[in-house]
Image (tube, rainbow, N blue to C red; front, side, top):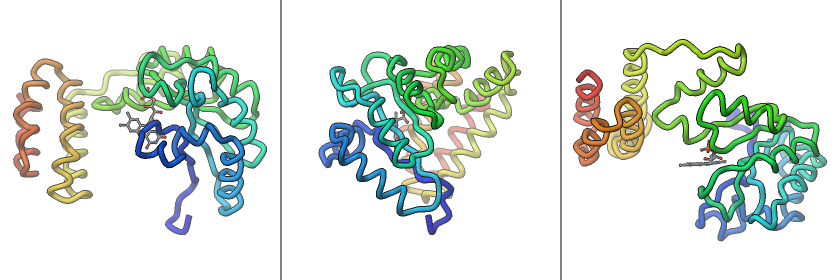
Length: 235
Ligand SMILES: Cc1cc2nc3c(=O)[nH]c(=O)nc-3n(C[C@H](O)[C@H](O)[C@H](O)COP(=O)(O)O)c2cc1C
């Protein structure tokens, strides 16, 4: 908070082993009393809004997100985001929205639906089904951050957004990679850029993107990485 954060979002949605083995991330959902203590402590420690991100539960027989939602609201959490999978699901199968619908019916604070929202129409369908107050989009933005605008426009107007010109998308990609290099430094920036370059290149053209990726993936020099990306985008 002293660094100027506007809100604190507590993450109880992470299924990673290195996090869950320490009773953090989605593993926390197993211990509702501990969840209550942690949420209460954080809410009392700061005077900015505290929000909570969680999964639907621990596993298919323990979908306790609705119970935790109520606990969270009672101790002062101001918004909930729910990913429609359990911790045990990891990323397998498809997200389900019944539990999110149930969460929404139990609390009056805003509820954000998350999981497998990959298009504007799907976003509308999930909102209609769950009555959630908003949607959160993760993996569908990888390589295609413009999907946020597409979804936002569709939800506001019911119309498909006008296509963003390809030259604008290409410049945005180059700016993004350049900013990663600047922010993280040459070595780490080059490493971290690789996944974004893969996502962008295969979003623009799956086949040529994959063969370009094989070439650029091995590059360790940030200037050469940028230059090859520029050449690919202009080809
Ligand atoms: C590479 C990756 C990193 C993620 N990191 C976080 C994280 O730090 N905190 C979090 O709450 N969720 C994290 N998530 C989960 C997403 O926020 C989201 O809940 C999940 O991917 C489901 O939404 P989606 O189907 O739209 O991707 C991550 C997901 C992925 C794929």
